[in-house]
Image 1: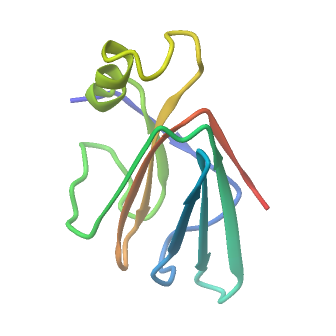
Image 2 (image 1 turned 180 degrees about the vertical axis):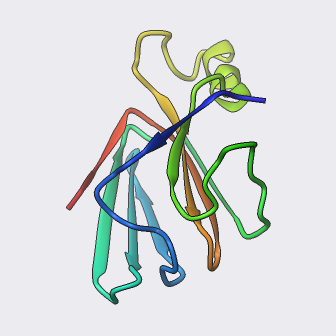
Length: 114
């Protein structure tokens, strides 16, 4: 089990609509309507892996309607072991939980709101 860090990213995934994802040249764009019905666009940089699942697969302490970083991620460790990412690249394993519809996991160097 990984340790995790709860993040306050500046957007809300709680009660959001089903998101759309666009992956292009290592950049992932996440677009969704939040609970206020405002469009949110989030860009993830240097993405090497991502997955979407609708099953509720949460670790202890992980918010079902929020964002966190998995600090001891086995998934991230596998990418380091395989040489897909360099040890000092700054890649992180992020989890965005949309309680109403699913979970997005991303290995990237960072993200920002567009």
